[in-house]
Image (cartoon, rainbow over the protein chains, first blue to last red):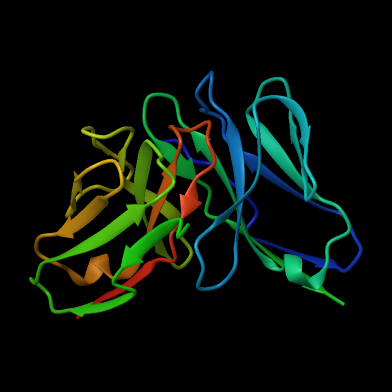
Length: 109
Length: 113
């Protein structure tokens, strides 16, 4: 079973831009890449979703290269409240939804 | 609008006991999912239901069964609980598969002794 792969952890300071990359080299042709945020003792919460190129919403941007084998979540000017675990989710060709193991982002002042 | 609700919130079972985790959504979503979350393993899909009347295996289905009772409800059953099933279980729902945002419930923390 192919996997999605993310860095286990990242550290940042308030006000910096944070980029988290996920590799998903067996993604289904027509399916989207989605990112979620999870705080302790809560279920994950949707952040952003895209199919190709770049998507931006009020909280993040998502960059997807032409081959779609990876994606990068960009969080501009992080704050302490962005400390959380971030997951990418892809639909793997022929099988099922595969979450990455998550990236724990720690933001310090 | 409660979103996705799960019962119970906490449960302790002895090895070999059975139980059913309940999940309900009030968003008129077609698709529903059950995940388990273990430390360092992220979220792993157990079963999903693309639409009412259908269920499919996910990444880790062994030891579990599911029932899509109606469009609102999707239950997860452990027939003979094992310590390896100690985990936090999340239910989620979405308008459709894959391309749609999933909404997650608050989770059920299950301990099997």
